[in-house]
Length: 198
Image 1 (cartoon, rainbow, N blue to C red):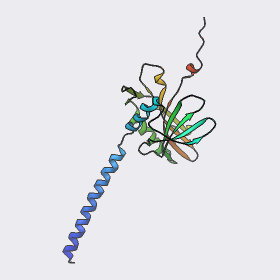
Image 2: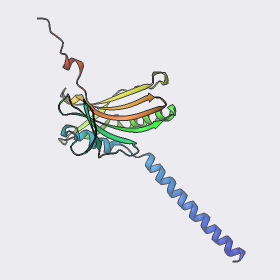
Image 3: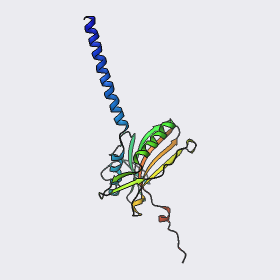
Image 4: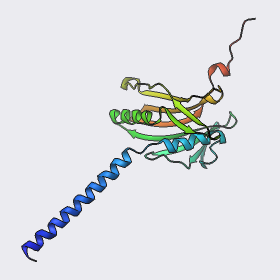
């Protein structure tokens, strides 16, 4: 092979490698900007159907709970499951672990990113209406070892406002965990109504 032919082949390889590198960088950028909204929309819209469309096989059972595999695994999630509380009829929660790391800064970035993606988002619900979920950002503090931001739907009916999307940051030695949780929370006053003086 002549020196000129060798240089041409080398130049072609470098050009090809550069094109592949640029293509890979574009794919990485696209993945980093992918939103969780479609996945979480599927979860919240299936809540009042007892997660029928996303509930998989039973994977664990205790005296008080039954845990099911979730058929829906959000992009980037480590694991996802559905928990049923036996003492409360048909009360279930869905959760996904989005990150598990020993780096506090990285965990906080993920927590904040999830909040930015989901706060103020409109989700199409089971009845084809759109509900906007929003909440106040709970600013993380490393000394506190946890942060929890709860997003609530802007709907008139009080009972429907019980549906929550929680973004949680929690420290359990040795790692920080970031989770997404969808559940229904009955307010304390609904559980124990205040007595009105007569």
